[in-house]
Length: 121
View 1 (tube, helix red, strand yellow):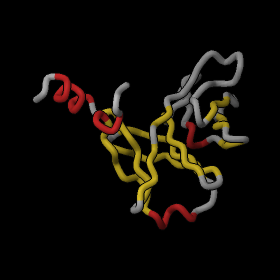
View 2: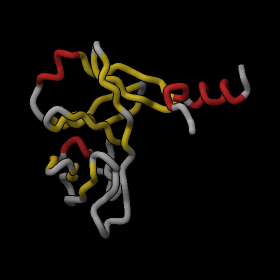
View 3: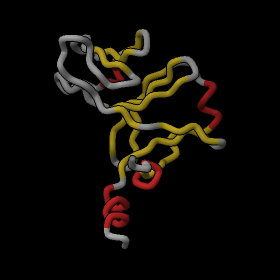
């Protein structure tokens, strides 16, 4: 089994002060990548920013029962798995998050670290 800590680049995206904000959906940029950050209750989720159906900005949508719903055509995606609703036949990418003592971190795949490890560089 792969240890993702070794091939992930963990980047701080929220400080502890931001945890107290109510539920939200935000478009954030991390290392040039657009991410849709969602807070539902005490849980955070990070997904790709564009709807795979028609390319709409998912941060303009809304949440219902831990489902992210696109504002354009009402396609819905499970925030835990990324799977679309039955019959949709699509999904969104979900990014791993870690809550640490100083804030919330997102894990982005670091291809070069994987290659370095593969060739023991």
